[in-house]
Length: 211
Image (tube, rainbow, N blue to C red):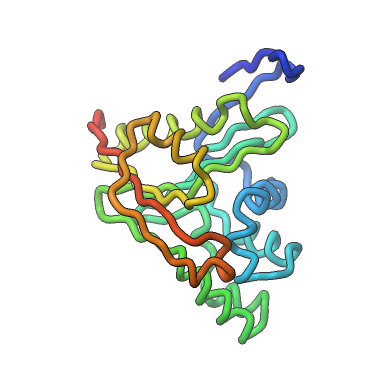
């Protein structure tokens, strides 16, 4: 349990609980949070925002995430992917075609394939961190990242890998502060109109296992 005290900006004192997984009954509200953070990346795949939220909500596998929760629900989320599954593991060709129709479903599959980052056997891949706009600047994202790193350490993973897009230098600084090191940068300006960004940096954190 982490208590956030009122700041000079007038943030109301509140209790935030961090935990692995969350109640699937909250899938729609969590999908709205996820959409707020990553909707630009997925808008080419599914242009209709309401439909995009619906598809995301159906795809969630909560056990592959850590959540920051207060009395009103999930206010922060960090997803991850391992060989056994991922937070959005429910997104697949069958679901997309059923929800969007054949051609739109095939198009969405093609766009989503651009974001695929398969983990190796002893690797955990981060799926990104989303924090409700009203709760940003309070260290929630940093705390969620710590939980991911601790989980990797306690469960025998050798590294945590992630990709940070070129338009998010704030996230890159957070990852660097935790010890992540950039190992590769890619630039693809020809895809910017399609996926919302023109480059990304792959970062890795070696893990000393305690599991």
